[in-house]
Image (cartoon, each protein chain N blue to C red):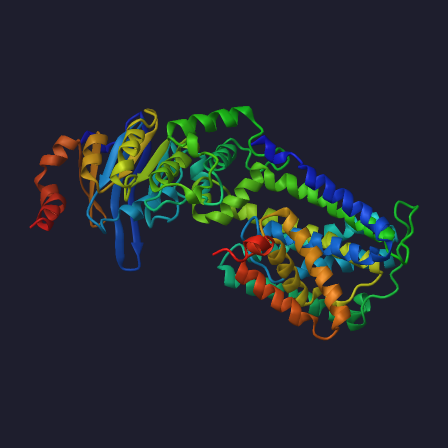
Length: 311
Length: 259
């Protein structure tokens, strides 16, 4: 069982590539930054969806909360990115703790509706509190200080990409610890069979509150990174399509597998980037087609072309 | 009827349990005492209220009246997981397993949870030698060692049935409620299961809910007959076997099935 905690060679290679990419592909640092942020957002959703079996269509609420908190902190208090990141995580974590009571009862369908509702409420709040958030115009004039007091965010996005990949790695390592621990095993038990999980003495409600809160904090980190690296926060962060997109990313990459969010983010963002440059108006058509094929054929088969023509 | 009274070595006492659902009384003044190491069978025709009684004992339902005492502590109002921590554990008539986990992962998770490690998130699962030892002992005891690394969903039915009981025993129960442990097990896998049930630790008090009369009479040293939510009678298997009331209500009904 101890081998589960060991890092495999391809994992180390993958992370080395992730850190090399902003320098090797300097012209693409901006999209690398975006991929890292989406991957982190998907990773946070996987903790509740993939590992605990809690469906959510409102995960953008925590993403937006982290983004606005970090952006407001930079604008009103101080421009240091790391402190701002901590503030974004803290705010989203607190919101997650409050919202966690809404997912304790009911079925998957009621959870979809409740999480969706929470997302809508927050978006409307950000819209109405325009003296603070800038309302529909978005929060402008966010100026970030240099990272660690030395590395200023540049226009090409290299510093931003390294920053986001680093935060992704740190939270990935923590999430990896968590899902391989006894705590993580009890989450999988709840996902597989909630009735039996209760019958062996797992405090199911308490576990759900903890994992939902932790996932909210990680989503807040992703949101904070986006706001800090783009210097902007808008209502779009809370939009329903963000919650839906992150679920798509996870479905593409695979749920219940920590690299699923990363793989999904890479595929989704690269497809979006490539398709929207070819056909700016209709790229969602191709994403949709890809999803239909993916789900009908199955991910296992799709990534193994040599099995396509076998019965 | 002195056995109907609590004695110093009584582990579990259910006293005057009543459960009403609207106008229906599913459990009617049921009193039951289990001694340390008891092998107690609960029998009764379908609809006698056996399932309701299990749900009352495990805390899924709150009784309308009556009390439940485990090891001298009143647990009537405790939540299910709190009762498990105090040693009240059940198995299910229909397997309730963790299909994506292996038997090894399942038992490591259960033992860790039971030893207060369920909230720890930094150490990997299976990092503690004493937890692993306990799991290997359980896997051997339940004939699951060879399949310990296969996902539970691919196991044969008999193995799944064994795992069902192994999970409960991993919680180190004081009182174990076995709900029809051999139900649906094919003949070829039945013997292994019966032997395992017979070899359960002697200090665990077991309440067996079962329709299989061969198992009941070979296993139980004490029996309670439940009819229409109430205790019809309680006694040793010899007494129950010749009790005319039981024959009329329960065994008689079975007899009539055969014509």
